[in-house]
Image (cartoon, rainbow, N blue to C red):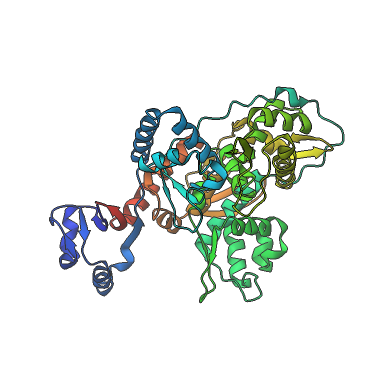
Length: 486
């Protein structure tokens, strides 16, 4: 198997006008040809003034292939013994971005045979490092099905709301939508950052025009806007923004789509996992389950902590059995710490308090002394269900009207990339542009546009369908796809 570039045309007759046969492999009658010399091909197309018509795309794994691989892995996991399945589930719960640290997930002495078995089965692989055996980093197979949820029961911790709960801060739902909008604008504009650390005024004004923000378009000072500067800081915290050293251009990593994908509740969960400390993210499912059990009420922190210790003692760290005594994981030169109730109060309960303070700042919970309760966004996150959505209306001139709560953050990201925001108010207005569609097709297929529209729009005018199909066909008359596995 090798990765190649593929040149494709709309019909086989198009090969005659290209004169690039020397740079291709395969039969000239096909609409797709393997590229033998990509740099030579691009030089030849540039010499014939056809380079501007080439759409350079990047290969993606088909969803059907990913689903098949996940199903095959699920069947393979089902055939393992209970010990292997338990260790793999623990590793998945501790993993962040498919990387788990062995020191946090298993006992490197007693469970080393299980780790070797999972590596041998191709379910995870060790990463280079200088850590002692079985304590370093391991990368999990990216197509693994999610681990089974821990059956938490925090009904005893649920209580009525109290009057002294804190005022909720701006929640992650608004932040996710602002991040999606700003990321799409940064992707289209590619602004430069000055040596002082701010965005260039001219580029910031262009961002303002693309975002439908007259104030920013006039001032050119994004840093003075609390809402959009917060979105930029969040993108930087996620590592979704990179700076080219020489040109000082800001670029967006479109891997951000993985964070925004799915329902709003799923996007919130992925965002929070990325923004909390690594040793705290394993506590999030328990907090989410407690908020779900409380519903519209609150959670007693003391009872919640006691129930968490009783139901999932190894939630943060596994116990290491050494000489008949259970200890916390540690390095050889560290003093052993007993894995007992006092240790839980000093370690896990302390981490839980830090986590609650963090997600309070993120706008998921409100807190009082010994009590926490979900905000409106926290209820969406804990219930794992999206509220009902109003429809998106589209007119025959390709203008979209998006009411509040009508789209998910991922859908917002696509609309902002496909077009331009005409006005950003209670109802946002967008217009789809041909240049935006062409740029969007670099990473997506035309059918995904109509899947989005059919999901959110009660009716799509025929002229809109014909226009998008015509623009897509024009953009894909000559396509160079990189990274295709053959």
